[in-house]
Image (cartoon, rainbow, N blue to C red; front, side, top):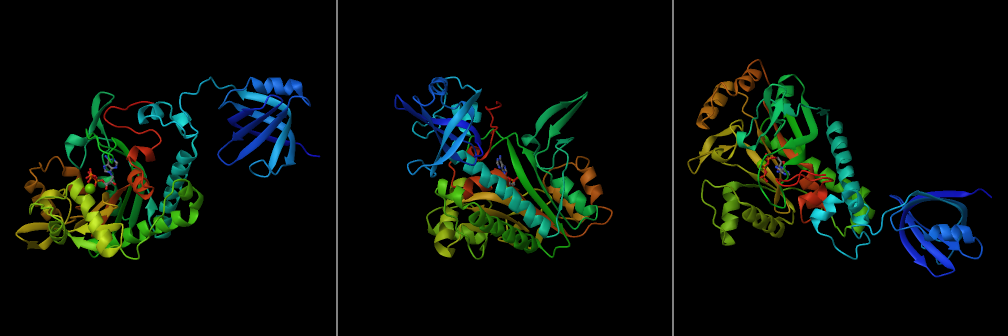
Length: 424
Ligand code: ATP
Ligand code: MG
């Protein structure tokens, strides 16, 4: 008979004196290995030295067994200790004892061995797959843009400064300039999945200093609704995809994904009315704070039965200079052709039609007290012909967090970075 070879981490050890069971596991399976003292005393003694979380390799006979968890057990003939784990292991991965997040991250290589963590990162990986599939199938070109840059487009205060030989450089806080540059370069549609750096000293459950952005930009649009249409199709595609392709992981994480048929689009003015009805007053020119965003999510869920909502018509004062403005004003405010996508009461995306008419763009920069020299390159780039265009930026980590109902965005990141955490 052909011998069966298997390897894995020693997950459980049960010693009954003359009989010993090991449960070993790897990413795909768990198996039982049974050692008999009488039949093979040398092997039995060797096995007794083994600690939990050691990695072993055995060759033996695969035998049917009703008691064993997957209907078979392995009776080993050879046993090789590939790596003997120090005891005790600093984290309990059986789920019986909870460890604090900091020590979990310090020992992330042990923490990741739990079925829950494996499930989270399998789902995250599938979200990436669904993302590339969706954009590729919709005519987008996958691009990579520099992360070492000479200046930013958003607020300068969020930039991490780095030393670049004798010069000063920064870590990219957004691929905004570059994705627009590719539209100016004649590409109709582009998307990028890449690292984004933000020097924000925030300690919330939704902010990281390094996150993975999903950025898209499309040319030849009529207005921002074309971008929302595409984004709506995208996010519903992702939800359907995970629901269909990650059933086992969703079960482990006890997550039920609800996919709405349509995503409502609600103006800022209307959102404020709805919030007012629930006792939350937001001043005319103000944005929703995170508390209002959460409440707004609940209102939409109740009214439209959707976890997702587009919040539209943000005032120019709350948006960057490059968002296009509508011709008409609302309540005396200059209104942008922009939107946020909110999922379960938390922003997952900001998008807009971009101002491509350089004369208006320059006026908008002056309104934001920016110097024209500072953005000279940006203006120039739009000066030699460019289609009307728009796009959006999404956060992969936040999508993963909210889809899986994780308490903190850090749970959705292998090695999270925050203002304090720089290791491992
Ligand atoms: P917030 O208001 O939540 O701080 P933002 O408006 O500053 O976010 P954008 O510049 O609009 O963020 O970035 C686009 C998307 O990138 C966001 O909708 C979010 O999904 C994600 N994102 C932004 N900042 C962070 C961060 N610090 N950590 C994790 N994800 C982020
Ligand atoms: Mg935003």
